[in-house]
Structure formats: C-alpha cells, structure tokens
Length: 110
Length: 114
Image (cartoon, rainbow over all chains, first blue to last red; front, side):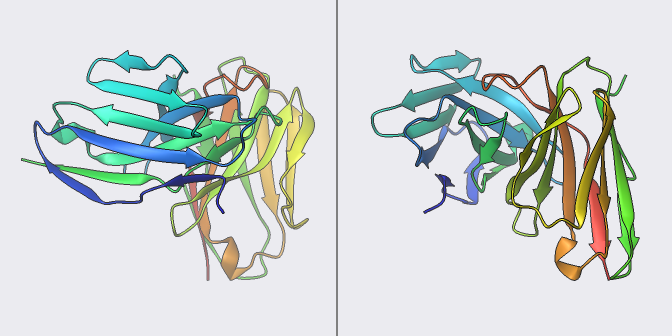
C-alpha cells in the first residue's frame, strides 16, 4: 500500500464548478499535512498546510480527519488558472522528508 | 531573486557518463533536499542535509553522491549513468528539519540518459 494515495484523475470541470480531491495516508503517526500544486513542467509549490480544525484560504478549503487518516481539498468557483496537478503531502518528522501522493490532475475548461 | 536555483535545467547524456547537478538557495535555510520525479510524475525524496550534515539517504544507489560544501549549496553527482536515471531532479530547502515547514523547490533538472 502506498504511504499517500490520491485519485490521479484527471478531473475535467467547467469554470465556476466546485471540485473536491481526497487523499488517504497510511502512517497514523504522521504529523504535518499539506497540499502542493504543480503546474506542467514546473516545480511543486505549497498551496496550503492542512490543520485538524480545517482551514480556508479564499476559494480553497482543506480538511484533515486524523481518525480516518484522510485529507481533502475543496476548490470553489474554479478558474482556468486552477488547472494543475494537486499533490497531497505528508511529513512524518523523519529528517524533513516529504511523502508525496501521485497527484490529482485538474483541468478547468471555459 | 531566485530562492532555490539549479543548474543545468536540461541534461542529455550517454549511459555510463558521470554528471553533476548544482543547487543553491539564498533563503538562509538550514536544510536542503534532493527529490526525484519519475516518468509517472511520482516525487520521491533521495537525500536531506541539515547544516551540511547528511540526514536522510533514502536507499539511493551509491552511484549518487550528494555534496554540501556549505548550507546554501547541495550538489548531486551521479556516476555511471543508467537509462533508469532519466527523470526530473528537484532540489528543495526548508528553514530547518521541523515537519511543519514549507519546502521551497528549485525549477528542476530534466535528465535524459540515452
């Protein structure tokens, strides 16, 4: 079983749609959780950290359920510029190592 | 202005050659990393260094040798390149080893081994 699992997609949605990505992780001792975004042929960049209480940044909402070992990302009112691969990432406090899911590809169409 | 820079951006070479990739960060961070992204886009850590000291070596073949001359630089030397080494290699840095820290990635080096 992979340490971090995501639905690879692709998700093809129209502009203005709401889209949700899910992710599960296998290590119950995991400490820190993130969503990174990677544009085609570019480096990953932090989108947002994920906290147990849930957190929101504009159109983006992230949730963490430690009991189910489940992380989600909700994007409201999708824009064309949201088209990218969204990476679910976990840090188990082992030498700074980030453990990446395989990424979920999102394509927002006009 | 670039926070984490890598050179070269593209590297095309023959099997059996030796090559190096350089990485520099100007963020004043203590910790640097090398990640490999394979053809299936899966990103996996290779090494981490903290203040020039090796912290993680993620069962990488010993043909790969990282070197950190100072905490702002982490270079990757690869001996006897193989076809399976073709990938994008990303350097990254973070403030320190604390798990909640954001990691900042360089633009990547696309290595093609022929």
